[in-house]
Length: 510
Image (cartoon, rainbow, N blue to C red; front, side, top):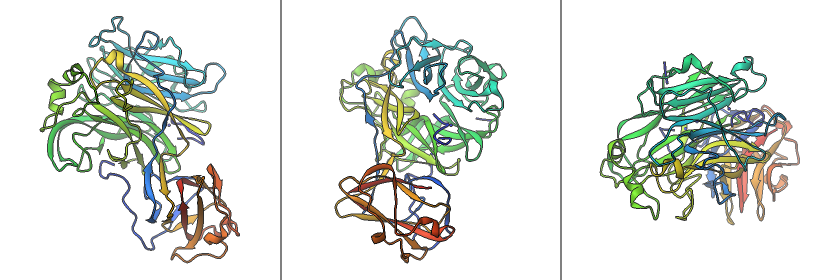
C-alpha cells in the first residue's frame, strides 16, 4: 500500500522527471492522431511536426494586488503554503471557499506553533475578511499539520457523505498522509480513525491529490525524501538529501497503489533543485495541467537578513545544501507541469518560470511564490499562491502569507512570432469536429490556418488565401475558410498555422 478538470469548465480547483519539456515530434507521415471535439493546449509539441520562426513562451500571470489576501495575523493565522480554493455558487454560503493550514498557538513567536486546518469564505475570491473557522472535526495527531488538498466530487456523487475528500499530513505518533470525508466541506470524518493511508517517514510531509476524469481515478503527488546523486545544469555532480516526488492512484481515495517516482533533479536543473509538491490541477482536453513548486535552499533573495540564512542551516537543511553549494535562506518559484497519460509528467525548468517571487526586497513574496490552487472565474483563472518574504525557515508563523494572481483561460504557454512571421505544422490528424476556433492574441498582427493532406498538399477551399485572417484578441476566435471544416471529417489532414506579430495559445475543435 502506498503512498479535480474542468468538468465542462472544471472539477479541479500533475509532470516529467525524465524530460525538460516536450520532445520534438519527428517530421514525416505517421499514424494520424484522433482529434475529438474539445480544447487542445500547445504546452508541448504533442501535436507539432514542424515549427519555423515561432517561439514557445511561458506566460506569467498578472499580479493584481500588492498585498496578501490571507496573512499570519489573528483573523487568518496562516503558516504554511498549502491550500485549496473552490468556487461553489450555492446560495447557502459565499461562493468561494478556502481550506488551508493555520497556526493555532496563541503565542505567534516564530518557532512555536501548533498546526490545524482552517476554513474561510469569500464573496469574490479576493477579499477574505475572516475570522477563520477551525475544523475541529479533523482531530490532530501531534502538533504539526501540512496540507489541505480538497477534491469535490460534486452534488451528484453516489456517496453524499464522501462528496468532499481531503488529503493532509500529520507529523504525530504515526506520521503520514491521512484522508477524510465530508458531505459539506465543514464537518469531516477521518478515514480509518486517522491512520496514514501511506507508510512514510516523518519529513515526507507534502501530499496533494486530484481526480482524473479521463481515466476515472484519483491520483496523488507525494514527497519522497532521500539522498540523491546527479549532475546539474552547471555540469557539477551533486550528492544531497533532496525532496523528490512520486505519483500513486486510487479508485476510492482510501487504498493507493505503489508510488512511482516522477520528479528527480537532473542535468537540466540548476544548482540544487528540489520541490514543494505540485497542486492546482486542471483538466484541459487530454491534459492534466498543474503547478510545480520549485525550492532552492542553496539560494537567497536580494537583501536577505543574516538571520534568515542562519535559520535555514543545520541538521537536515544543512545536509540538503551539501555537495559544495552555497547555503542560502531558500527561494522558490512555480513552473508548469502536465501529463497526457495520467502517469508520465513533463515539467518546465528554471529557464521557463511561470510565477516568480517579486524582485523588490520590500515585498511580502520576495523569496517564494508557490501556486497552490487554481479556480476558473468566467474567462479568468485565479491562481492562489503562497509567498515568503525572506526565506524557507524564517518567521514561519508571520511571513508566510497567501496571495492571488490572474491569467486568462488556457493562456499558460504561447507559440509566438514577430514581424517576420512563422508557421506551425501539425502531425497528421483525424478531425472529428465541424469547426475550429483559436485562443489567440493577434491584435496588430494576424493568424491564418491552412489545411493540407497528410502529405502536406493544400486542400482546395482550405488554403491560407481561403482563410479569413484573425486579427483580434480572443479566447475563441472562429476560423473561417471558403469551405466548412465538416467536409473533411474522418480524413487524415494536417493543420498549418501562419502567425505574424501574434501569439497562439490553444485551438479548439467544435
